[in-house]
Image 1 (cartoon, rainbow, N blue to C red):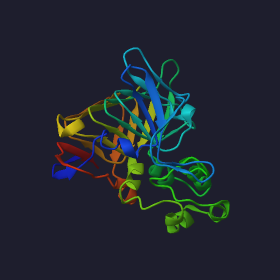
Image 2: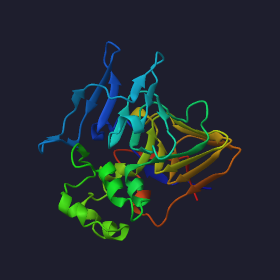
Image 3: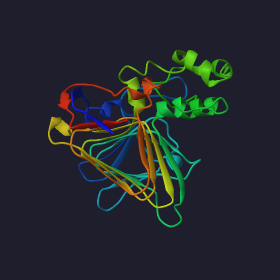
Image 4: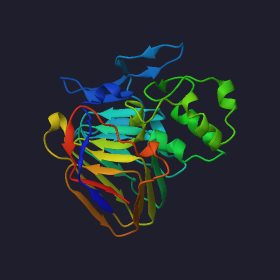
Length: 288
């Protein structure tokens, strides 16, 4: 691992709230509220302001105010925004997580209890496509940019005829602008983010587990640019991260299994970290 300490610009979760697709928050009375935004919905309508919805299955909050998010259960595309702390309930593959998670509080991965031995995958939306094969690129595109209710931040409108022309990953990459907006530009580059937290992230892999994380993991300066976010990676299992680790506070690793962090230099789009608003002095960007 290497540390890069030049000034960078990152936006915190509160700044990015208006660019999320699903928002999970509490009102002044303390009741939870869920919203959708920035979606192309059935009938051709594009939602550009938050609309309150029934909170989806797979999202809950405990009596301590900590959110739980199960991506494979919610099965919603796009960027999830949480007010406060969130526990990411990962499931064994093939029930992979394919989302961006932004949180004003902490982000913690959870592999559950009991017989948890196995492989767990979590993908930022763009990285899900970057890691595709010829046999699954169409299915993965449908997951990231479905025909309806797709995120307008990074998905282009396309029809079944255009989709049918995708015969390989090479074709998709050569014609990516027909299906995706420019993922080097904001806000489309939010699709590169796996986790973004204003306080801290904690990643853990238990014994006999392999945790594969694809995408950038960011700890910001927090709301208003004050304070510093930290990161902690622990466990006795194997942890593989393909992307950047960006923290403005301390990064602690206590891994008894194998840990690899790969910058994925061939996937330049996937390395793009969204920049916006104010400049921060990063204490550690970790990569190999």
